Length: 280
Image 1 (cartoon, rainbow, N blue to C red):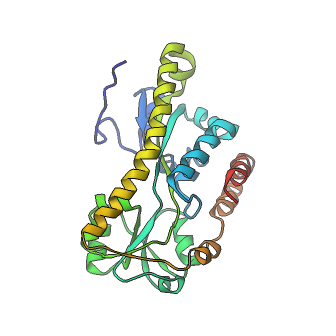
Image 2 (image 1 turned 120 degrees about the horizontal axis):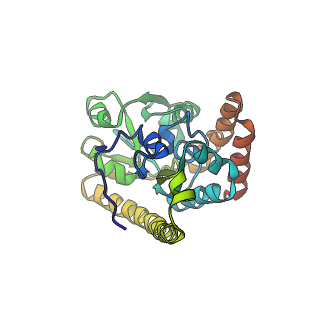
């Protein structure tokens, strides 16, 4: 099987991929479900909520279980004409700051990089100030003092070169995330492709998912070492338990939002499974 990859959104914008795959204009695509809050509110939840997963392995495990065991997740995919083959994940999000963040009190009043519908509520609960800044503007915002801290995984901090303008890296763990899956057209998968092709895709997807979990964990370790070699000081955060207790369960907050949208029953399926499968 030969696959032609259309790089750098040459086959469609990241916010168009679900429509393109679902309509059959392209057979496969990769884009986060969280880019489609109207079309995929259930599938996008694990890529959106902070302070839930301790590491990327846990994010991957729960995400795979939700897809396999919660009918509402697959029904939502079917409605959009897509089917997910496997999901990737990201390491825990941290804060890289202009000043040391060693305790919960240090977050008070700090201007933190924020985004989406849920991260602002986390910063508010921690008495910090969430500033919505586009990813490509974070570097300059740190450099010019609009932000006190950025908020990314170690690997993304390195990739975005933010260590050049901020040097204090807190060990506070704000949670890992699930991220983009590989999508296939629903009708192709269920009605047109022969079993031999589906078997091969299933096997390769399982291998890729397992490799991704290990690769992300290794990349996080390498990124941390790189940051330290480039003058970043790792600052021990002393109040992780207090931080965890201060931030409300974002899953419950999300569930209430889904109920307000008339999606209470399917969202409850997701919530109940997620809580049951989370470490105590």
